[in-house]
Image (cartoon, rainbow, N blue to C red; front, side, top):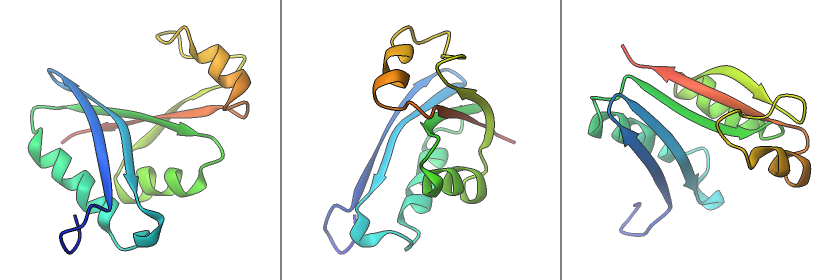
Length: 112
């Protein structure tokens, strides 16, 4: 929220010490104002039990890659593509061919 108006959102799932960042989005009208980073910091505060956070983003999303690696402290740990789909997501091969043909990065953040 900014000035009482919604400017983004986040969807996470937590299972014990593992957390998945499913979606984090900020309105393009307020990009580069620290809102996404502040939202991510709040997620971490709300879930101190999580030891490893994970997320994925398309290969071509340079802004997302910068955000996760340089701002939030994630590390790129795997590159999914048509020759190396996610073994835990049987539908990914189809998604890689149709929507993300350049591939997807998997990120992890290991907490202190």
